[in-house]
Each structure stands twice: as C-alpha cells, then as structure tokens.
Length: 380
Image (cartoon, rainbow, N blue to C red; front, side, top):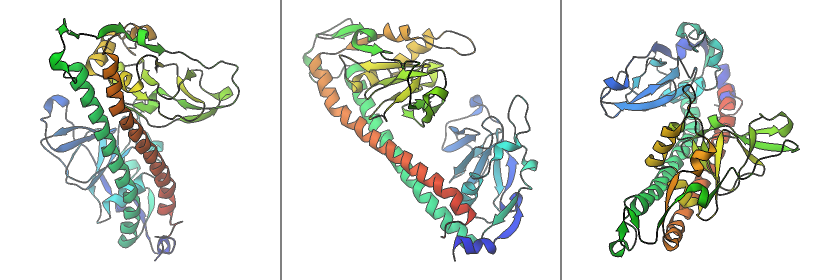
C-alpha cells in the first residue's frame, strides 16, 4: 500500500493521539553524577547522568530556549525541565513520531515574552493524520537509513580528528616527537625549535572584500560554526548581504570566532565554494611558513583556548581581537618535523572534509524527502 493511498485510510486525530507530552525534570550540573544516561535539554544532549527519568525510545521537544527543537533517544534518558518529553507514544512508531514532529513548525506556538516558551496544551490539539503502523514503520526505516549513514560518517570524522589531535599532542605538547631521546631541551624548548608569535608565521585577516564587489557570495555567519565544523552557509547577492560579510577565506585558512572564544567556534576551510565569505566576527588565519595541519592544531589546544578566554574583553559579549591572535606565542618545531606531521595529518583533513560534504548532501536529501514522505506524496 502506498503512503498516498494509506493517507486516505489514516485516522484523523489530534497530536495528543499521536504522542502525549509531559514537562521535563529540573536538574543542575552540580546535581549530576557522570553516568550513561543522556540529559536532553532544548538544545540536545548536554551531559550524561547516572540516573534517568524516562524510558527510551523517546521523543523530546524544546519547551524553553531552543523552542520546538526535536530530539530522539533510543535508550533511557533524563528530559530536562526546558523540554517536553513523550510520556505516551500511543503505540505509534517512536521514530515516525520524531520525524513527523520535525515537519511541524512548533515555534509559532511561542507563549513567552523575553524567553521563548512552548505550552503543551497549545499543541496537543493540533489536527493530524495518523497512518497505519506498517506505513509508519516503512517511513521511519527510510529516514533512519539516512540518519544512520550521517551518524556513521560523524563517528569516522571524530576518529580522524582525534587521531590528528593526539599526534599533535604527543609530538608538540608532550614533546615525544621522533628523535626526542637525542634532543637537548632547554627551558622547555627543544634544540632547533623556536618560540614565535602567530603573526610571524601566519597571516591574520589578509584579505577583505571591497564594498564595490558585485555578485553572489556564500556567507559564513558566527552562529553557523561549531567546534571544528561549518554547519551551513547562506547565499546572498552581495548587495543584500549582512554588512559583516567581508572576510575572504581560501583553502587552508583557519577561522576563529572572536566572540566568546570559550565556545571554540573554529573551523578549517577546505576546498571551499567560490566566493566563500566569512563574517568580520571571525579572525582568518592564513598559512605562510607553517601548513594548515599544524596551525589548526596549534590554535585549538586547551592552552590556546585558555589564552583567548583570558584575553577576551567585555562583560555581555566577551571577545578577542586580531591583535590577540597575532601576539599569541607558538612553539615552532624544526622544519623536518613539521613536514613529517603534515604528511600524516593533511590526508586526515582531506578525508574529514569529504565525509563532511557527504553528510551535508545526505542531510539535504533527507530534509527534502521528509515532508514528502509525511504528506504521502511519495509511496513507501
């Protein structure tokens, strides 16, 4: 039976017939003990606790803060007070419910003033069509296949990134580099190495776009960057682009958000689209005498993040400036070690980039398919 045909046989009902929500449970970081159960807030999994409040599988939606966000937990979990959780799935397929809710614009039910708030009583009566369970199962299986591929790629990327990070730490932080047994170290600096400023080995904000530029750009906003990843870009005709759209970025550059550096909003630019432009809220670090592989890891260690955090100015929006990057100290190894490191790590960066592009395409395909499956436009 196709989804289109089954839609005629779907049961008309209310959202509460598909899933009944209950408000989550308050818990602070101080009250948590590390354990296996995810604590899911409106923004997703924020920590893990040794106790749970809800059995999985379950669906969680943002009640406060990130309003209307939708999350899924396969196992037992702790739904935070900022969420609503699926107390009763009414014998429906949990993943189908999850995907269905992603097609509903829950943000329009905001009842808050300064802080967005979602009231379950305002959404429980939403009219819905509930297809037979076999259609729910097939629909969920199709969409889950995409998410499984995305998750598999994400794990592979994490392994690649961790391998590169551990190698940098071993060689250039712990100083257990090839030949270290026969190298004299004075005041923490191995023979043949030198302490320099980043501005001596890399360019900082080397190129900006002229206001007279004419054409389209792909824009990187600060909110679209999370640790190590550019999650999305926005295409603009430059005439209508945000005024901050000025930083020119090229292959091999490293971008770092100046605002709240403790959030680690940085990313490496790898095989970018033409006319990729970043916000002036970023510092763009361009390789000069050191390769991208080394600069990326040198500027993302805990010590470097601590340096930026300590130099941030401002109470509401603590931020660093380009000069803070230029004057930051960096320990530069002898050239042969840098080459050896780059030969091992550059291929890992390339593989990670390929997987990230694959995930972007998988997400785009899934998000295009999702509403068409839910509406019954596509047969399953």
